[in-house]
Amino acid sequence: MPFVRIELFPGRTREQKAAAAKAATEALASTLGCRPESVYITFWEMQHEDCAVSGILKDEQGAPSKGP
Image 1 (tube, rainbow, N blue to C red):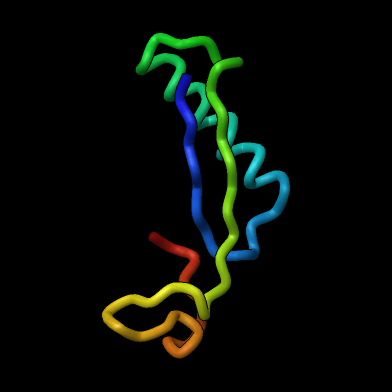
Image 2 (cartoon, rainbow, N blue to C red; image 1 turned 135 degrees about the horizontal axis):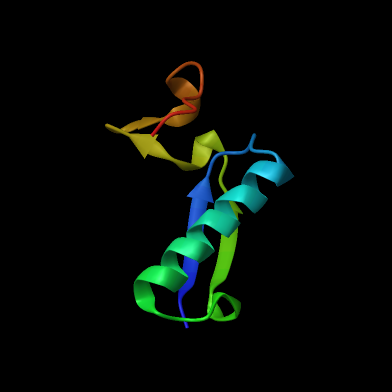
């Protein structure tokens, strides 16, 4: 039974999260040979002040990145 935790910054719509959950579920089910019903996915939104890259908090790095 796979458990997946997706951490991201706020700003994604409910529809985007639903599409991501569906795509991840399908990929895991086909790759791991499990039933889609056994795949659990949670989304955790973190604030930019709660994450740092290269020692600098994201809220101090200018405009938030929507990319990887």
